[in-house]
Amino acid sequence: MPTRTSRAVPESEALRRVEEIIARRARCDDPDLETLPDGPLEVAAYVAAHRRVPAEVLRRDVLDALVLLEYGRRAVPALPGRLDRIEHRLLSLGVESGLSLGEMAAALGLRSRQAVQHRLLRHAAAERGAPRSEVAERAARRAESRERAWLDRNAAALLECTARLLAHRDPLTAAPAPASGHAAPDASSVPDPELAESFDELAESLARVPAGPRDPAYLTRTRHLAARLRLLLADLAAAPAVTALPGGHPLRALLTRTARLATAHQSAGSASPS
Picture 1 (spheres, helix red, strand yellow):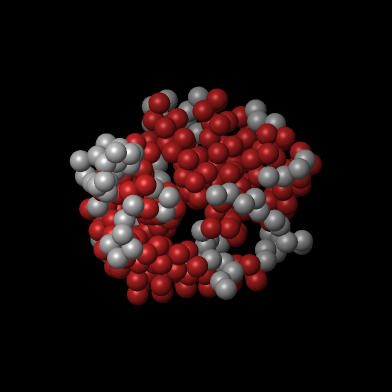
Picture 2 (picture 1 turned 90 degrees about the vertical axis):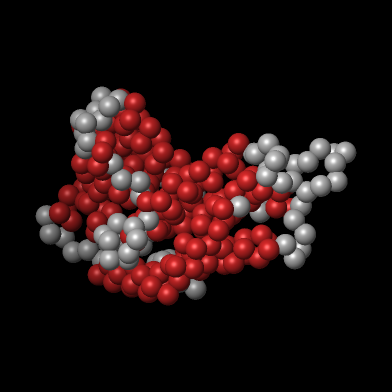
């Protein structure tokens, strides 16, 4: 079987799609809302399994969930077989709910309706017992083992840096001082609303990380936290409050260490480590 390609989905888009699915489910009073998770792959699996919502909501959720799967194939170590099973359920659900093959092709980054039809047939054949790629399965298991080993050694430092970063939310989100002023931005300045929102989301993600690594949700919640952390760090790199900091400022050291840990975590969980 030829090696499949996957669409490159930025973390920012994946997190946005997760938030849109959660918001739609909340607006339509999804009866299963209390069980809705927040990890990209878990949200995609939820959409495939929980269908008691209006048809329009379901159709939009399926398209967003397909994008989340494409993100997961590159960014989140997981068994390919599991992703294929979720994709099969989502594609079948899309057909049942009235989505066109063309709409689903666009979500998956495919060029034609025929490519979606081919995937449906291939998934159906796999469920009937056709062989899966053992090489890909083993690579995914190794990637997850590397990530768990990295977290065993470094999770405490990653979470500590995140908490320290959150403690400095006010000075880091401060708007630039007036041109006539000479002081650096401080906690009394009006905060940048987008950065402030990103800090709020990161705080929420940190609060959801279980206390111990034995919790089944620990790995997923830590991944989600790290994804939000990387997005925030990228925004902070160009934030006026950060660029105004002197070179030896303690906050610069904290940002550097946090970025190093976040990048190392992403590399540890990559299916193709350098």
